[in-house]
Length: 426
Image (cartoon, rainbow, N blue to C red):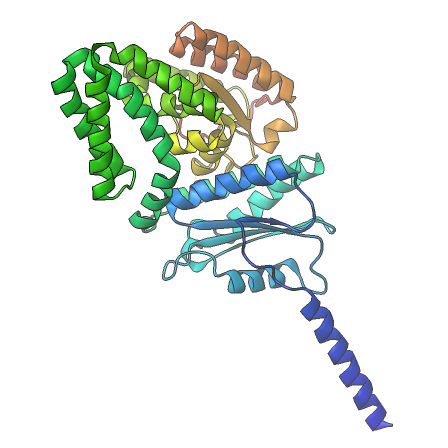
């Protein structure tokens, strides 16, 4: 009888081990692996771009894994096996993070390497999952939930002092994706230089600029010299009609590629600088706006932050990062979500595109309809179109004050200012 029980026990152990072995860890072929058809192809591609761009900029690795089920394991146990198998993060830094989503059971888990435990402690990881990801999932906004959660994670990692990403790796990727923009610069720059300075001086100037830009983008020395020679020769060839011919050539090239909007957007962000934002928002006017923010917060439960950014990194603009995605990153980096009642509200202005985004935490979003935020953004954009930027922000603050006073009044409760009132201008 005892022998029969022993065989039965052995059989059960074998069955358990087989069941466990069936739950294999997929190979890390992409920063986003969706085995449950949770996202569309377009959504997965956009999320991959976001995570790859963050990796190139910061060095840390953030991955999203979506599986149908993890039984008989818990999400934490399975996620730990994935972390051990994928070895996310840089060697010696251990700055990887994994967002695990179990589709069938609607469970989530956020695991981080030792190098990120200070940036993303357990309490922050729990709040990202409970306060950001799950409420959006309940509304059926799968992609938006993952995008918002990863943006908050990126914001927390951005606030951590980590080693810079390897220069060689960033240069290799940058050159591979940047040479078309350099070609566009050569066509336009050669024509402008020839028109302004004449053939000889213009060719020398554009040649030197092309060599320097090629090196910055990651080209080798010989390739940079070759590009400089081509640019100088192009300037000599175009002569006094260089500007018009260059514009025609560039436009034809862009039409052939079929990505005019993409080129224009990257060029616009590349040419926008921080001093433009500082010039349009004088210190005295910002001080007045900050005082208005402080006064507004005393009347309602909202905690406000304003961010004005001149432009995106041109590589991010080239890859298609939206103003909304950047606003979500700021929402996480400034910890607007880290308030006692989840009532943080971020107002983000992207000057290069005159785009305005409002990101509100769930304590406000459950009271305010999305259409009200959209209406405020539309009013502000009309003010920005008239190039009255400070008035546009003041108008937005006034409208937000009215909305929060209506939906989330303070009702005489003591006021605690949890977020700085200073306007971030970059």
